[in-house]
Image (cartoon, rainbow, N blue to C red; front, side, top):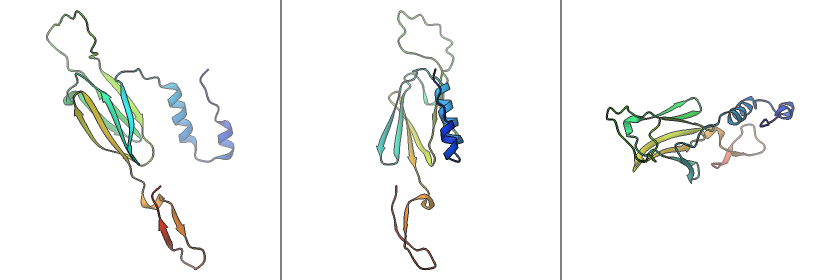
Amino acid sequence: MRTIDLTPLYKSAIGFDRFAKVMDEAMRVEQGGFPPYNIELVEQDKYRITMAVAGFSQDELDIEIEGDTLRIEGTKAKSDAARQFLHQGIAERNFKRRFRLADHVKVVGADLQNGLLHVELEREIPEALKPRKITIGGSEPRVIEAKAS
């Protein structure tokens, strides 16, 4: 049984229904292992998804963001030539891969090199959400220090 009971969370927290939805989707969605991919932290607040898409051209790949979901899809063009394989180890099948993006994570670019698709992501936290120190006293709060999280 692969369920998580989030009822205790609802008793003491408000606004976590989105978290519950993400957890529920993660438990239900079972994506296959094709195509293989890496997710790496390039530097603080910068990420890269690298997918092995050998045999796909730039025209056969589609990257789309809808809400907080990044969708990468590969659709192989139909070939008119009949080929007879003695061994077929290179998968030439269509795929769809979805990634849930955290708040304030934006896709800043994509590149296809040597059969690897690189999607660059960056977290851009708005200035209003960054931590800041407030002086005590006085009628107007005055920011004395602002640091990136």
